[in-house]
Length: 111
Image (cartoon, rainbow, N blue to C red; front, side):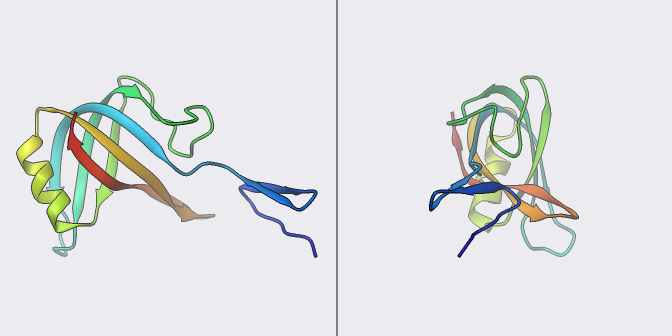
């Protein structure tokens, strides 16, 4: 039985998938609650891409880039509001499909 994936390849029974983990440090610039009241969006000015495999992750942040990400947890959004203007370390993942997607915050902490 063969296994195929849009993000990986199948070779001799071993599935190799692209990493879906991005780690950045930067300055938290904005934190905007979503209009529907569920989560919100943060914006980070990237100062370093500290991903395990920076050239292979899905988000591929670049130094100086304004990176926007969805923050779904109310506690993360509350933390973000307190950290505006400060240096942060953010762990992200990319959620999406063929029609597009977005970066999603997994953890956010002062950095």
